[in-house]
Length: 201
Length: 201
DNA sequence: GATCGGGCGGGACAAATGTCACGGGTCACC
DNA sequence: GGTGACCCGTGACATTTGTCCCGCCCGATC
Image (cartoon, each protein chain N blue to C red):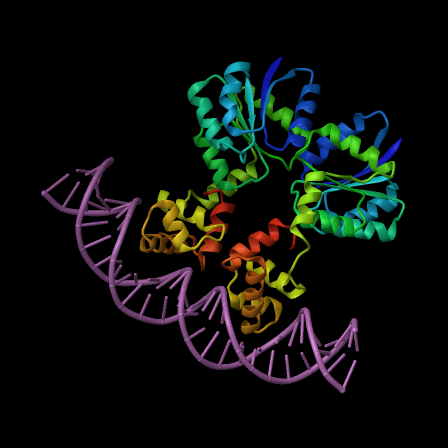
């Protein structure tokens, strides 16, 4: 029996996937969590062979959770299951030691197949997505530019950003200007959107 | 047997829900579509008793599809199933003649129960969400303000908006200013975010 | 017929934003 | 020891944005 941990914040999705995977004759859901910061604890307790992690979860990102797992429970294989096939997500998933990357757009059978392949030591990655990730290239943003863009994305003013990041307003302007330049966009809103779309935030 | 149509763009979610509902002894999935603009055709063909509609789908919004269904197939009950419990969505769903409104955050069993209740002529609405919808009130925006905000949301400049809507830049400024005022926000990005959050776009 | 809300536009003004050039600091790497 | 990347900051400047006036037209409503 393949022992599976399932981390996904949308309750209905999590329940549906758990039930489905539970129907597979060779699989067993040994843990379910709805927050990224509960993954490690649950995995220590349940000792799964494979962890299915969503990326966007409250508490802690699935990508961060994957990195934690590699460090704390090296034997456990991680399979990222996400809504958004952002190039940067795939890149970061690989850096975090994930063995597979599946988007929720594919058929459900694909998921069970991916679990088996990952457990067999195979890498599971959508080829089109891999091409996109390589084509887009890594993030051109520095850490600070990323921070500033992330805050700017939801309508904060320069003063807001400066206050939240304990920076001078001039500095914030400069980072924003640099980010806009590097992304080839025309203002911070476009820059933030592009960065989010590419998974750079 | 309750004949169910399922409209949901995320393939994995759709497949999982279809399988689960298919397991219910008194239900039968008679049609599945992944786009909003295929709902009516599929419903005419399959003659479902209940239609489960996601809101955010390519082609046509689930809310618009619900309105179409009420007009074309009045006997068919509509149940909206959405990720986002936006107050405005609920309001618009009711105006479009939906019989129920379920968020994907609840347990899966809730979905089958909602289908049965809707078919029995009961209204299914999350009480907390209904309160929020009534508390937030209807959209204060005029049609044009809504249009302008929708375009402004993804980083377009005033000139972009004016060009896309065939308006003068001055007019766009005035609409934006009005929208910012009515939403009580500080700039168009915040205004657009709030409007989206409330389901006003 | 008058009034009101909405669509559409103009002009003027202050504030926010984006750009550029510049400086200093730390740290890693050659 | 030099070089380069990144962090942090200043000041000046042009552009964009948001606000507040004003006007006209239309349709609905009283």
